[in-house]
Every structure is written in structure tokens, then in C-alpha cells.
Amino acid sequence: MDFYRLLWSHLGGRPWTYILRDLWHRFEWLWIIGLLLSGYLIGRNGFDELLGWLIAFNLGYVAGHLFWGKDYVPGQKADAE
Image (cartoon, rainbow, N blue to C red):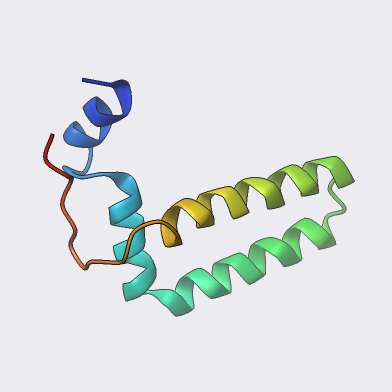
């Protein structure tokens, strides 16, 4: 059993990407407001340009894992081994 599977099996009962997908589809407006507010705060507080690029890259990386690859299935469970 890999470390990630061990973590999510004890904390949430299914992969965290599936949990986040469900949260996104249930509370889209909250996520959009949160992302806009985060962008505003990063721009307003004048973070170092490199830090801003790293944050933007990581947000895109996570979003890619959430929305590309598999179709969204509400309440999706982990794949059988």
C-alpha cells in the first residue's frame, strides 16, 4: 500500500481529488470567489514575482488533476485494486 492510499483511506475514505471534485461541483461560486480573492490578495500585497509564478503554477497543476483525465462522477469511490 502506498503512502497516499494509506492517508486517504484513513482521512476521508476515498481519494482527495474525488472529494475536491464533489466540493467544486456543490460550491462552485464559493471556489470562484475564493480564487478571485486569492489572486487579488497576491497582486495587492506585492508578493515576489517568482513566488507568484510558483503559486500560479501549483494552482494550475492541482486544477489539472481535478478536472482532466477522468469524467466527473458524483460521490465517486476509489478504483478497485
